[in-house]
View 1: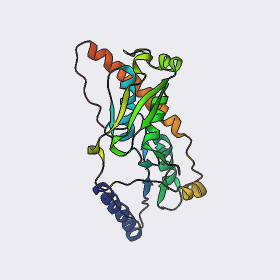
View 2: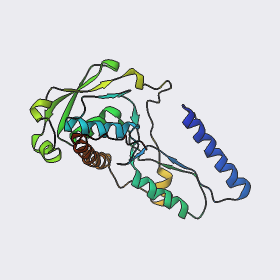
View 3: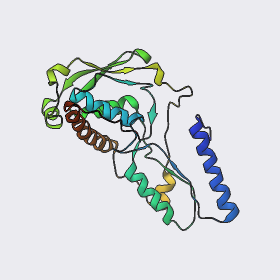
Length: 232
């Protein structure tokens, strides 16, 4: 283990205290080492939800731009439904053990952004390097856009050429981890667990949910009411 944040240090402590109690007191205690698992109810301060909320609001004409940190960072993202199913399977095993829960596939933040916008028919073109990288709308599938964003205050023509993604150095972490990738071979071979959801399905679930949520917010704001933030 090589923890790179206070959160990771705390998780390492939790791992070893679980092992200690299991061995010292013969407790049925297991560690689940879960890689990034997402869903439509992910807290809005997490990057995946920040992306899907922003993509929804930009498509609706409620937000100008999405600011992110390291677009090259790669993560092993899975659907929370798959991971909760594995948690249950862990607790049904005859012997308590420690398990890695992951998809075994890695995706860059930039690609996640493109997938989110693609849900509403928007194609992005990224240009520049590092903090100067920008994402601009290069094409819109109007049929998909009109079907999935019928309440947009902007027409597809108004969105073409619009710069909607930019890098903000404030979002870079002091000890950035460029790549996170898990190996769930043990879970697959011993418990038969394999993820059922593809990343595209996860992104679509999150986008569908956030479009409904942001459309509702649009109506509330038009009525002169304030909107609460959706923090986890």
